[in-house]
Image (cartoon, rainbow, N blue to C red; front, side):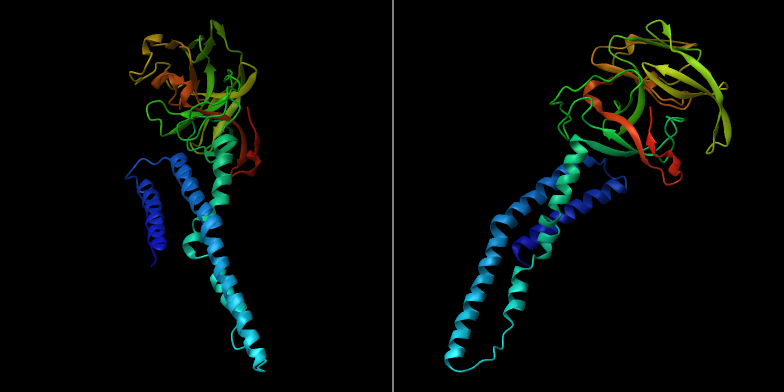
Length: 324
């Protein structure tokens, strides 16, 4: 093995080891960081291939051409017409990209496109739980708009353009405040300065009850039971919510989160004043959602993007389409 083969083997082994350890739960993985590093590494190989390795192979192929032409001239002078060397085959072997460049420089364009799309335009997510039923179901594959709320640098998540502020009723993906390596999806019900109350299973924003209309009961195929369903209008968004009358309104197990002093808990529920630069999030499946009632407010720095479209659900193709 030449030094480049050894180096590439070590780099690829490191990537495989990282993914394997992440899959087995030995480490807490960071896909954005992994994709960024893959883009940088394959980009370095791509530049080396374009400006060093490929020109060197072309010079070697040209040298074969020159040597073949000189040999042909000598054979012609000697009256020999048959050439016993397949020049094109030899050139093909020399010009062929070695495996260690196939697996690095060869992958760079694809990895770079995925990195740019995922970082600045749209990112796919899979809904893992039922906290957003009936709006989103387990197994929905959704797209998240990464630029509506302002473009952010990948990995460090620093905002570089302002965009628009999240609005009440938006379905938003964000980094889970107690564990920022995890992505959560909930609905924005309170923006900075709002007073949000969820008392006796009714949502009130700034003293005004959110308009609510009863809908036919919702049948949850996973739980194999019916739940009370309502339509709420938060901001200008109309959406369904579920309520389980058997679950008490009291919030059990709220953590000691930042700005907890802005919240008042009682047997009826909770009332919170949303601090500046933060948002109050709730799941549409109100009695089956670990949300801001339990772990507090989402800071602007944790925002990932606005969810807007189900692009696939392999169990139910009728789920494909936009949602509110």
